[in-house]
Length: 351
Image (cartoon, rainbow, N blue to C red; front, side):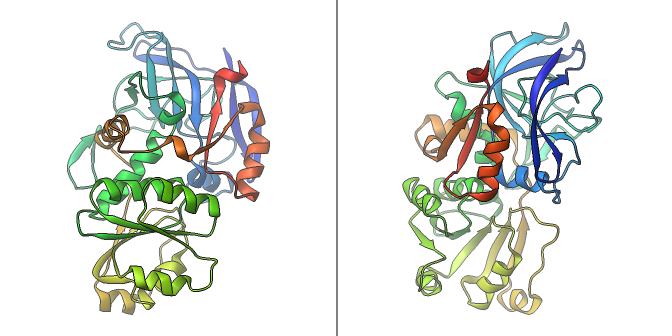
């Protein structure tokens, strides 16, 4: 069976392939028919341009899929055709490919169990959450009826943000600075907010600054404006700095200007080949450099709970709902323009 997918075919090149061939459905497999898939701009841009997250070329893009269960294998229990689910970084490779299949596809097939991830990649079912506790990451998560597909398409990014805030120790009385207000930055800020922190965000794109303020940031500062550093100094020093831009120079600048408190934490989220910083500055301030990799099932379920309780916002961050066939033009927008934030592919509308 042939399906449609958005494929990164070479550095900077995006194509829509309509001849991807699904693997056979095994007894422990399930088929998911996509309704929406959310773009993870940072990771996907990194992969498209051949960065440190690259899966090589060609590779099917994306990792956030919302869909309905189609066929189920004979040994699968607990999943029924028509059930709405969220799938993260999941599925068997398409026929003739070695990379995991990506989420920006019309249909995927993958394991219904908790540990198999893609082409021969097997991970432990148990992972550590942001506080060092063991938590499970599932392949598929059943979705409540009151969570729209468009919002569910960003559950991984929201959970990554919650995880980053927890890794940094966000809590009551912890002043948090978020560098970069893309989706990860705004979700990380929301993660700090629900934990009780006061949160300040910085960026240079007016849309992003406005959205961060809309979801509850205490203050936002435009890095392109005169007096930015002085304004940041008045708001600081910060106990926690969440760095989402991938710009190592910002780490040194924050320390040089003493905008991070003694004993504070940097949480490094934005993808890069390496992290470098001035040792003397970090040494004198006794700061910690903390890495934040992904999220657990517990955190994903917590985001769903917070969203249903009205304490987490996703809908205001969705700026573009587009057709999969428009993917090359959409990626031209993502690479070269700034008037966007949350981008979701609507697979139902194209059918």
